[in-house]
Length: 447
Image (cartoon, rainbow, N blue to C red; front, side, top):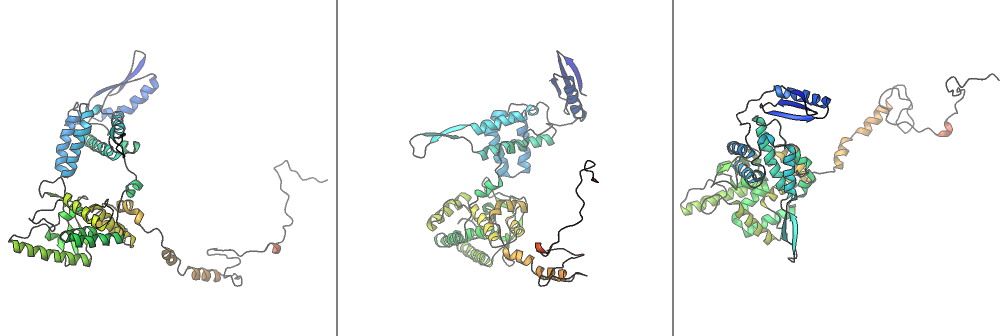
C-alpha cells in the first residue's frame, strides 16, 4: 500500500513494489506526491512471486541466464553471449544489484563504450591516430545481450521493467536498412560465371561445393552440413535440415539459422554436377577401401570440411580470376538472391529458397535489386480501356455525341471522363442577376 506523509518540509511517498521491496520518493508539492502515489498504488497491489533472490546482482543473474541459454539457444549464440558478458558487461555492471540497474546507468555504460579510443598506426606509418576502440556494431551487440538478459529477468519476475529497451534506437546502435544493404557484396552474372570457371580449372575438387553455394543460395554452414540423404536428385531438390557452426566441437551440427529446415530447388546443371560428384566420391572410397563418408563435401580422410579453409581456397580462386578479394562464400548467397530477383523471379519464391523468416526480410535485404520499372505491366493494365471508355460514352441514354469526339455533351449518368471544350465567343453574358448585397446594410434605394 502506498501512502504520502510530510517530512522535513517535503512530501514523501512510501510504497512497496511487486517484489515487496520498500521505496521512498520526495516531492516539494503535495499535489505531485499524491499524483505519484496514485500511479504506484496499483503496482504495489500486484504482488509478484519469484524464485530469484531480491538482492541478486547482475553477475549472479547472468550465471542463471547463461544456464538457460545453453539449453535453449544455439551453441554459437550462447558462446557469443558469454564473451560479451565476460569482456564488457560484468566488469562494469556485475556488482550492481539487478533491481537497481536503471536506464540511465545502462545508457552511461554504452556511451562510455562508444567514447573509448585507442592508438593505431597512421596509413603512412609515420605517426599514431586515435580511433574508436569499438565499432558501433560491437556496442550494439553488447546492448542486445544486456537487453535479452533483462527481458528474461522481467519474465522471471526479478525486475518490473526492462530498462535497456529502445536504447538501441536512441543511441543509433541499430544499422538502418539502407546501411545494411550498402554493405552487401554480390557478383554480377559475368563475375559469377568467371569465378565458377576458374574454380573448375584451379580447384576442381572444390568446384561442386562452390557451384552448390552459388546455385542454391544457402549459407556456408548449411552446405558443409549436407549429407547424402539430403540430396533428392531425382526430384532436383535438396533438403537443408542442419547447419555446421564454426564454434561446434568436432562434427556437431545444429538447426539452420531460421530454426527449421527447408527444401530448395536445383537447376539441371547443378543436379548433374552433384550426380557426378557422388560417383567420384564412391569411386575414391572403393579405391581406399573406406566406406562413403556421410558428408557430401568432405576432406580426403572423410571428415567435414573446415570453414576457414574453404574461405582460404575461395580467396585463391579469386586471385586467379582477378576478381575483387572482398567476396566471401556468403557473398555467393547474395549473388544468388540478387540475380534471381533481377531476372524477375517472385520475391516469395526467393524468400523460400533462402529460408528467410519473412518476406519483409528478403525485401529489406535485397530491395536494391528488385526491378523498379516495367512499362509493359502498365500497358497491360490499360489494355482495352480506351475502347470501353468510348463505348460507355457513346451509349449514354438521351445524349448527343460530339462529332468525332465520342463523348456525350450532357451525360446524365455514368462516368464523366472528359467534357468537350466550349469556345468563349459561343457563351452569352449573364443577364438579370441580382446585385450582391452585404447583409442589411446594403438596402435598395427608390431614388
